[in-house]
Image: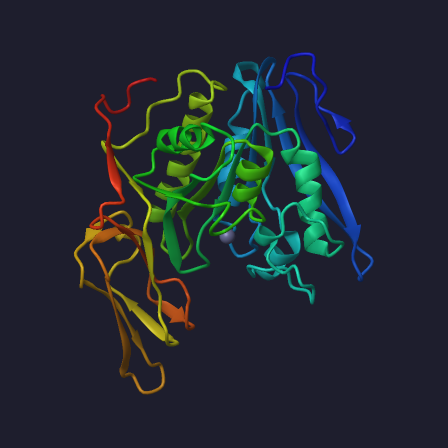
Amino acid sequence: MLSTNQEMTIGGHAVAPGERAAIRLPVTTGLNGAELALWVHAVRGRAPGPVLALLSTLHGGEWFSVDVVRQVVTGLDPEGLRGAVLAVPVANPPALRLQTRNMPDESDSPDMNRIFPGVHTWTSDQLVGTIVREVLAHATCLMDFHMGPWGSAFLDILVGDDFPRPGLADETERLALAFGLPIIRRASVVGGFPGPRASIGYAGGVLGIPALGVEVGGVGFGRRLEDRWRQMTVDGVRAVMGALGMLDGTPDVRPPRQLVYRTGHRVNPTKGGFLRSRFGGDALGREVEKGTLLGEVVSPYTFETLEELRAPVRGALFYVARDYPVRPGDWAYGLANTEDGTARWVENARTIGAPR
Ligand SMILES: [Zn+2]
């Protein structure tokens, strides 16, 4: 909790109660002589409260959430806010520049979401180290946004259930449910994937704060769907801020039923080719029966079908893809298993749109 007279200094700048600031954080100098910097947007309410950190584009190809962060930050009024929001819209500028997932250099820290808290001197470690020092050090809750690269789209929130601090996993799940997505994955994020060197494993496992891996949306699906996913995410962030006590009067955006699952299945191609998708962006969240044909991989050379992608279980689609070229292993379909007894449905009996 950030109290009213507590100092919050970011990059040498003391953010006062009621202040909104865009702060430039110098990180290092590149071989091209240019200084590499991060930008953090701080909105501090006049009243005390939690400090919510928002991270976007740790993976450079995942820029869908940049505009989500912009909308959240510009839509906040410090007068009605308790606590503060610290938002990094672009955590990995060199990778965004090339629109690649990983840092485009020859380091052995290429993936910025696998190297927390950034202990080495590689560019990516220094970016992570700056985020940890200047942003996460103040945070009492983290939301880190990820989605697929162009052509794939996601719809789930990852919450850890192996955080060592008692009660933290349930508190994180409460916030994830408040976000309002229909699908939530609860998994061992510290001991399992993606581990304590990823943002949420580090925040939950080491810092002991609620940490949500928000995976919503994607690009290449047209304005109607993308606008819907963007709005869903902005509304979800504000709903979580309501659940944290940072904002008053945020609407309850939870759907009538939410799936909390533990077993996920990746149904990705084993061969490269063109994916002809039978379950595109509109199908996100839909439940399919075991054996359903989800898509086919077709050779762009011979036009023959190289592979059929079928649902290995009955489950809900938490990621899908449009027609696009795929390499072996690229994102196609993710299924939340609803038949093995590890998933549960949370029923929300309430009036849609009623204030919290
Ligand atoms: Zn990512």
